Length: 138
Image 1 (tube, rainbow, N blue to C red):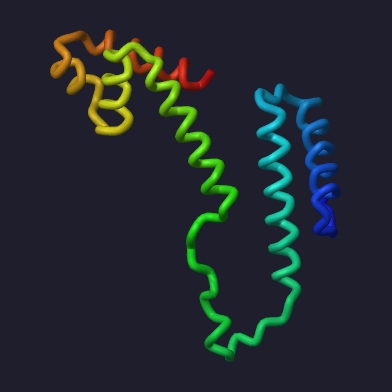
Image 2 (tube, rainbow, N blue to C red):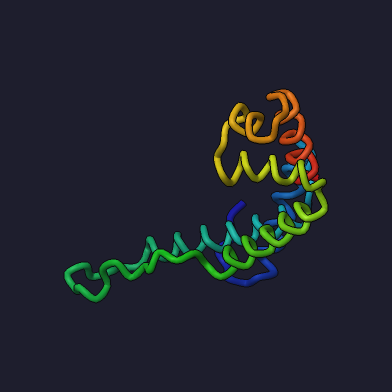
């Protein structure tokens, strides 16, 4: 269901409809985030449709490459918010689990390399990483 109006209420209503449709097929873990992302996507889709129908004189050099490539403000806000939640969650992990997880995800070390540096088995590294991933997913 697409909306042709820029009215935020219409976008939100369309997002609620999508949530209901999706909820009938699968569980939605975070309905609030689902609604927000769906409404934003609908707004982007609408903007693209409007932009695609407008006539642009491409012989005018001032209209070529108007995009600056930077993320939208809501995307930056969402990413910062998500990063803050991850940092707060990481801070509550056991220090050794946090260190092993960061060695794997940030430093891109293989389990074998982490095991050698930490003086533990590869299996223990796997367990620490799995524990951190499950914790962060919650």
